[in-house]
Structures are given as structure tokens and as C-alpha cells.
Length: 175
Image 1 (tube, rainbow, N blue to C red):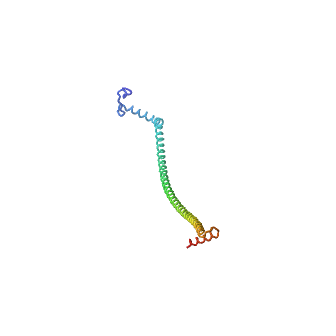
Image 2 (cartoon, rainbow, N blue to C red):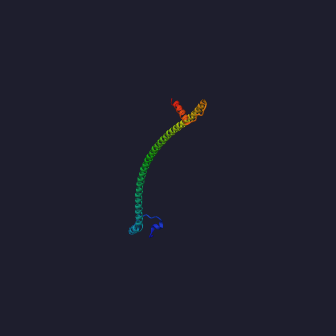
Image 3 (cartoon, one colour):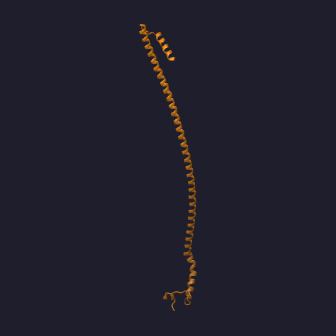
């Protein structure tokens, strides 16, 4: 009988009655080596798996916290955008009002300046009319004095004569 029959035949059946002793020794050796296997192989594997699970849980918690922070930042950004839009609309309305007010002021100033220019032009026209009338009056006085001098036959050029003719011309103008 061979000591290790399964090595010779290549078949090993632990439940076969002729290999019962071998199966028993296999179980005893396995039982004795199990604490070492647990300590040396399974222990580090279990520790690594637990550590990996811990990292995964931390990553999940960090991802959830990041998601909440992102949602909070997004909500704050939406509020800020809304406030900026409202502020922009307010500033646009204020600028439009200022522009309309300034346009009204410019128009009023232009109308006032135009009125001043019309009044000034009218005053200048009156002054030129008065100047022209005075020149015409003086010319009429000179012509009258010359005509009177030719009629009288002597020079009518004294200051009294001029005053008299001026009074006559002014009286004619007043009527």
C-alpha cells in the first residue's frame, strides 16, 4: 500500500473510506494551521478590506458634503445673480430717469437761451431802428435847414434853427 495513494493515481477523494486517515490528518493540519492562516493571511486581508471600506465610507461622506456645499454655493450664486439682475434693472431705470431729466434740462436751457436770443435780437433791432430813425431825422433836419436856407436866402444853420426844426420833425413823428 502506498503511503500517499492520491499522488500515485492523481485522484484524491477525501470521502473515500480508504483515504479516511488522510482526510483526518488534512483536517487536523488545517485546524492547527487555521490560526496561523488567520493571523498571517486573512488578518491582513480583512484589515485591508476594512480599511478600504473605511476609505470608501469617508469618500462617500466627503462626496455628499461636497455635493451639499456645491448645492449651497449654487443656491447662493442664484440669489446673487438675482440680486445683481435686480440691481442692474434699478440702475438702468435710474440712468434712464437721469437721462430724461438731463434731456429736459437741456431742452429747457435751450428754450431759455433761444428766448434770450430773441429778446436780445429784438432789442438790437429796436436799437438799430432808433438809430436809423435818428439818422433819418437828422437828415430830414439837415434837408429842412438847407431848404429853408434856400427859401429865405440866407444860411439857416444856427443851433436855435436846428432845435426848432427838430421840434417840428418830432411833432410830426408823434402825430
